[in-house]
Length: 103
Figure 1 (spheres, one colour):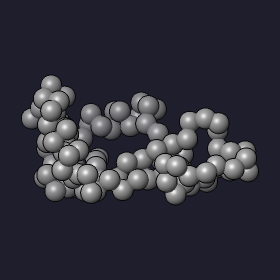
Figure 2 (cartoon, one colour; figure 1 turned 90 degrees about the horizontal axis):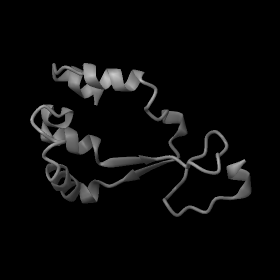
Figure 3 (spheres, helix red, strand yellow; figure 1 turned 60 degrees about the vertical axis):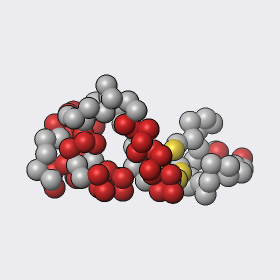
Figure 4 (cartoon, rainbow, N blue to C red; figure 1 turned 135 degrees about the vertical axis):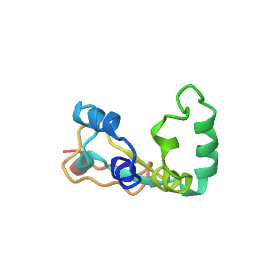
């Protein structure tokens, strides 16, 4: 999102402050990236149902719709418990997890 805002000449200071807050999830601890592009129109409509959170100044509204849809076409998940070994990558939400994978 930050790269896209910069590329489009938009202010991204709010996102940079959030990223610097330590509240973001590290990329190397994402265990599954799920392609939801076949549901992107439903997801896009759902965003629009939250008018107080998705107003004209929202970061998602300041980029071209096609770019935003591309960005939100993948969802990222992390296994919270038990703590997995570093480098674990799951194939699906329902992947079998062995004792060796969990550490």
